[in-house]
Length: 507
Image (cartoon, rainbow, N blue to C red; front, side, top):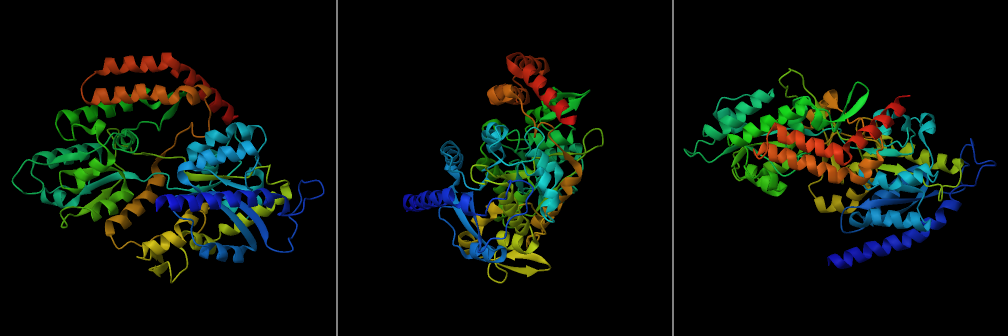
């Protein structure tokens, strides 16, 4: 059945690719000089070809698409490409000159695949034009900058929360032990110790631990706790020079904190080789009382708790030893949207497409694309969108179109979701609150040739050293030895290149 579905998707992709190659030249007539001209008014609907990632097995129905076309006077030709083969399809289309007029990236990492082509003038720069559109000009400069190449904006973006990170804990266990929500790293330690040693589930057995963690130093517990200690996000600026996070004292403070948790048995001892599924299972089965990661996970964790009387709660803004707090952030976009010059022939044509996206950012169309049709796919409750319980219908009609959204709640008037589970509603509020304490990565819009070539391999040196320190296999001197190896094998060059790019971007 799956093979049949994938075949249907690929057939649709192939047929739409042909259509995309034909659409670009007929979208709008070219202006006389191709520059600084308002888009000509088409006689009929404007044709726009789009390539977007498909994260479910089947191509969606055209229910939402027809409504969008009607409200924007367009005819959309969408290539739904299976997510697993998206970058491969994008590269093949670039190589054969068959890109559509609108190209969505699979994720921020895919931008690396486009940078050479962008620098070779194969994509339109849109930054100077955004101010002319009432909705597009609301896109956030910080996130636009994170999509930039050499300081220039070539893309629109699809917003994702800048930081979902925080603490999820067993409130019923905390109540049993008279513990309040943790407000500092010291409070967190005391909670983990109490959850391990003081029989929080009142079963008369010493069969619980404080923290369930996994083999992920970024989306697991380590990076979030490291933020609370004041560690920069991947890289930090010191005296005009960019320095990697693991060369800051706060990183070592975090290492010592986790070493203590591990030595005292307050964390699962095999966390460096524990999967996310097994980590969540420890929490859901009542073997652990704290989960640090995406606060949005509280609803899925609650749904699978073995003890249905369990009560979960969430916390953010934990302060470190210096009394300050912060939280690491991602670049703020899930996908960026580019406009190939091979398909969009003139600036007039580009402006016509931007007009379409400006309309797409209106609250009416944003909510249609993200939630579907009011009364069918969602209902309004207390001014918020309560999604239909018929998930098969929403997956079939709505979910794939969410990949075409532009902007997000902070810019496009999208409704907030309504949640009947209080901890989930609180988590969503705290995710928004995280925006006030963000620690941004200064290298997000920058390039380092050496990092592109060697960065992943070199980072493995630091990852292994971090785990080995926490489990007591190496000491502080041993960790520094591995940092020196990182520097010698290419790290010094990465520092040099990122610093040069950082200083250039500031001019």
